Structures are given as structure tokens and as C-alpha cells.
Amino acid sequence: DIQMTQSPSTLSASVGDRVTITCRASQSISNLLAWYQQKPGKAPKLLIYKASSLESGVPSRFSGGASGTEFTLTISSLQPDDFATYYCQQYNSAPYTFGQGTNLEIK
Amino acid sequence: QVQLVESGGGVVQPGGSLRLSCVASGFSFSDFTMHWVRQTPDKGLEWVGFMRSDGSNYYVQYLRGRFTISRDNSKNMMYLHMNSLSADDTAVYYCAKQGAASAPYFDSWGQGTLLTVSS
Image 1 (cartoon, rainbow over the protein chains, first blue to last red):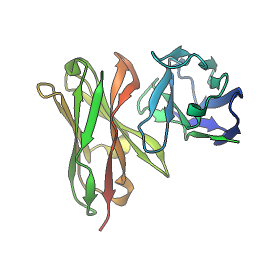
Image 2: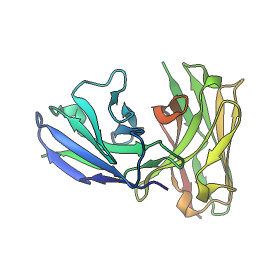
Image 3: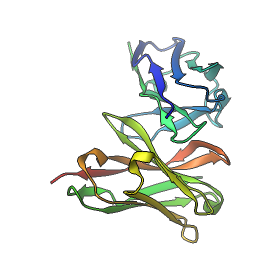
Image 4: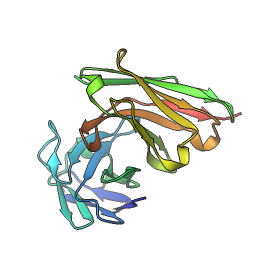
């Protein structure tokens, strides 16, 4: 199975900050990676697919990047609504696996 | 708009069985592969399995034989049949719609239904 390792586990930041979350795959996944946002008690919400394609309706302050087996989710200017937990997911091959999550909290 | 609504969760004794349901609306259900994903505080998000529109399916290895996915395209319904339940199966179970053909990321999720396995 492909292991997805996210870092950091927790990130403290302020409104207006630029933040980056990293996800590393244990093997090549051909950029077949998605990012989700989850708020307490709610289902995950798709933000980005194919490593850098923005899902319809998602603000442009969210962006995804890729370099080999390392992937990034960047939020260019944090808004109050962005404080949540973020997950990456590879869909290159089954079983489709998720990172352990990054909790983005208010500093 | 796309809506997915799960039901059927509850408290089940160890060794018991349960069937979860997911009703879909707002899209052509029969055209899409549908998935089940579960979430626990300890293990995070775990993909369970999928069923394609043609009825073919695939499961995570450690659940094969105990979990079965079925669907009824005429009713826009998907089901997750679970047997020999243990405390490790305690989780919130989500149904999720695949984003695109041959691209199993999940562009819509239900609100989740909680299964608790406990005596």
C-alpha cells in the first residue's frame, strides 16, 4: 500500500498568513493526489485534485504543487474560515490512502 | 446540487451485522462509481471500497470477506453490508461520489453515519 505522510501535524498561524502543508508519498503516484478540508463534525470537502487542479467553487487562495513524490497545499492569505483539518489522498492505486491530517489552528 | 445522505448507523454488539444505506440525488447516480470511506480519531480517514456503475467492486484487503458493497441504480441507493463487527469497526462511515471516471478522488460526501460496536 502507498503510505502518505503529512507534515506538520499541527500548524498555528494567523489570519493573513501564507501557509504550506506538505504530503509525501512512499512511491510515485503520478500526481494523482487530492486535498480535502474538514471542519469538526462535517464531512471532508474536496479542494484540489490531480495535485494542482482547483475544484470548482474553491477560493483561488488555495493552490497545490508537486515535485516528485512531494506535494504541497498552500493557502496564500489565511481567512478565518480556513482554520480546519486538511488531508491529502492518493488515488494512483487502490487501496486509496489518506495522510494523517494537518490541524490548522489559530495562533 | 449533489446530495448524499447516509443512514443505518447505530450501536451493534461485537460479532453483529449491520447495513448502511446511502441515497443520492442531484446527479446521474448510475453513471458514477461510488465509494465508502470511514473515519476514526485514531486511524483517521480509511477508504473502504467502491462499486462501479456496472456492479464491479473492490475493497481494502483487510475488510474483504466481511464488508460488501451493493447498489440499486433504480433507487439511487448504495449499501454497505458489514458482518462480524468488532470494536475496530467503530467509525463514522461516509459515502462519497467519485469525481471523474478513472479518477477516484471524492468530489461529494454525505454527512456520515456513526457506527459504534460495543457490548
